[in-house]
Length: 143
Image (cartoon, rainbow, N blue to C red; front, side):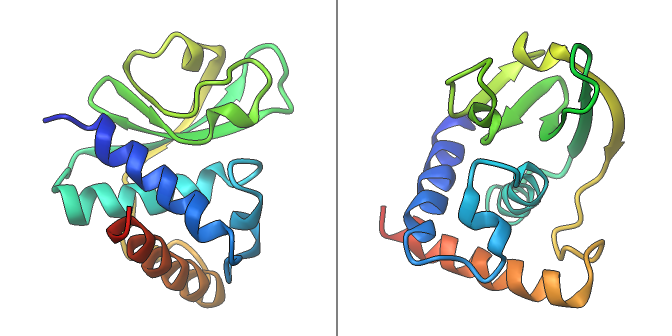
């Protein structure tokens, strides 16, 4: 299955939806400081709309700058990331790569299954993100 195209389109839809602002304020900074929430929304999309069931959400700590953490998705051995370009070490906007060399800079500190209904979040955050997810899907439909 070709994953790159729907992931690129999902990222473009976030940027298009961002123009009018999001209910979940952190997304307004996309791709800066919202890798966890963006990854959760992308996981929801890939699970519900593409049918991927074996995704994982990966949290890593930069091996060279311990204060820097990052969150992305993994499908088997393929790293999937739509926010890596928030870092000066890459200008690549979308990663869909088997064992991405760029992601090797992060020591994995947590791996978990995504929750498509975002149940790991409090009610207010979940409500705002689900609202924004619908907005992103609407933009995606018009790309």
